[in-house]
Image 1 (cartoon, rainbow, N blue to C red):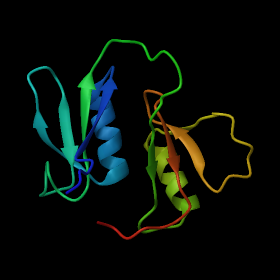
Image 2: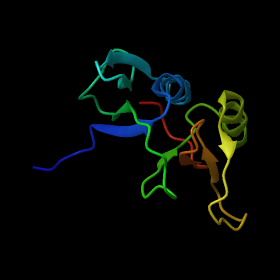
Image 3: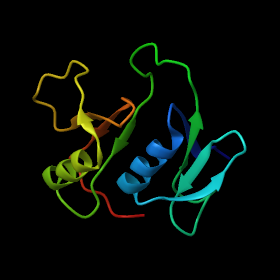
Image 4: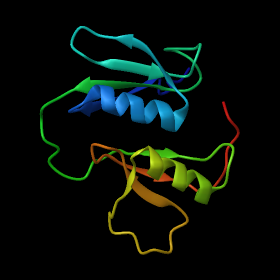
Length: 127
């Protein structure tokens, strides 16, 4: 028997803003709110425990001290990388410099709160 990642928890200064951003990026919907302001998002009609991990955007006032030790990679599902890059930038992502050389096959971006993530070139099937 093994484990699998069921949810990722992201500290957020503005959980509503990040939930809206990541819901648009991933095609997720909000399915739960905690009393502490945490927002749970995941694939429509599935919620927690499905084949894809859910995201929990948890309110936090703690400043981010340095580069994150974990980041999310996303892959386009219905368009090429260039078209997906345009879409993500229109949603509020911005280019991020983490020391890449420029010859990488991926783009390093930051979400509206500065959390780095990568847009990979390889297209994957929708879940």
